[in-house]
Length: 94
Image (cartoon, helix red, strand yellow):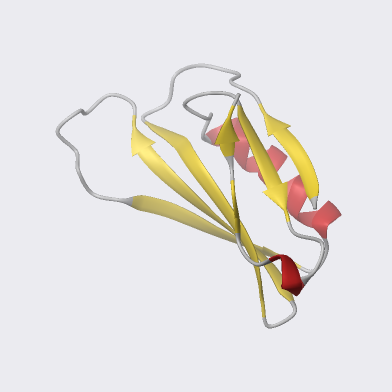
């Protein structure tokens, strides 16, 4: 398992990263980012982004780049499974 930290940076945006789930799907590493609205409290729809990569390093780079557009609600630790036997892993707040 690889761990990385996503920190709050930049200006407030309309959508923010709430949680990240990582897992292997058919030999491809997938990260599902669940977004929440920062401004519209009545907005109840779930929005998300799906990132796909072949290696953990590539997924880390994608997560760092997407964090510049959608900052996390809180500082998050994202866990990335090294192989398919680890199952799906969820991020947690620090």
